[in-house]
Length: 61
Image: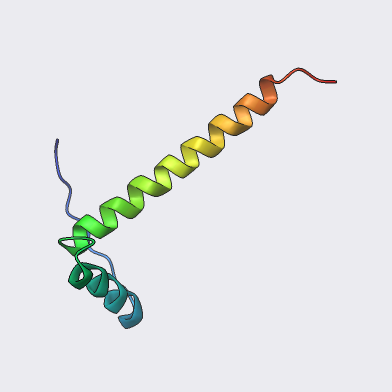
């Protein structure tokens, strides 16, 4: 898999939050944390789309 480098700018509070998650041992790096957030967001969006499609396919009463 090809990896693409991105540069983001965060306010101090969000950077502190990420660092606290790393210190806690939940993530090993800033990048791991951001990748996990993106994966979860994609899964949520896909789940919502499947739910909408299922409702559209549901028989009408």
